[in-house]
Image (cartoon, one colour):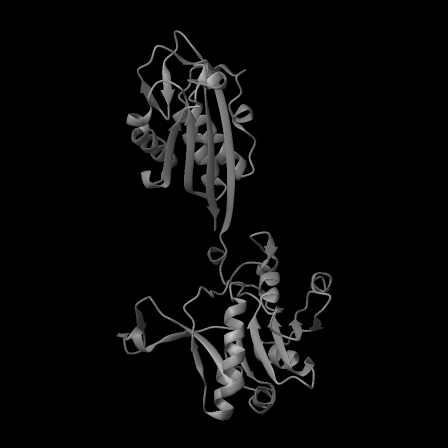
Length: 355
């Protein structure tokens, strides 16, 4: 029988709150951690002081946490079934551990008694006592889940009550041996808020009529043409679509609300300047723009020679690199108001990050 003890009783002091309840791609962090084990183990024990988790995981056993990690693990081990042969001990704040890794660890522990996932260290490391750099090629960062022979790890926890920082140290203290499993997959622990970025996408769309007597402005670029786009501002349909995508992604109201056409302050305004205001709004809310993609639909004129400059203008307004902005242009094969030369339209999508 295979068991999993998942630790979820920490206070999240370095994170500044309950990190296990934070949403990660639509699910709480703890849910990712628990669900990775379900195809492999026969039982799950969750160590937590939060009774609300019982509704999300009705199949699990629940035990209270201890005064420190050592006691919490021991509480979890004492709650698993007597028939358990192997047990994985996992920090609930590691939501990226894969089912594939978990299966590898159980297979290894079945043969060796222990299986400790470790990953390479990529940063330069200093020994601050001796004030010299350490050869990082000889170092490994220890991760969870760590899988053990159930009876052996339970004995180790009962025999060595010291407050070790992880389970492998307890096992090593009891038996003097460990079996490491190299893991190159992402398996970071959520410790600080920057470890848990929030990603959002947004979609924007805009369309404007082409009329005589107006300048044509797209992406802040003035383009020589016999018609221009009609609107309260400069009617830059490309920049408007990008702004609406950014506002949508960040949970703000659209440009009609931000820059109403009833306000003379925005009469003939540069949309690039308005985009800078949107960028500042996102920045003040903690959002970072990762990617902008847009497709301008116009029958005439040819926009290909201007696309790079448009992308550069948008990037400068947003404070990002031009390589993060991709602008394309297409026709509608003479169909609709765009194809008839009566207007231009633009679709845009963006990716933003907080944390």
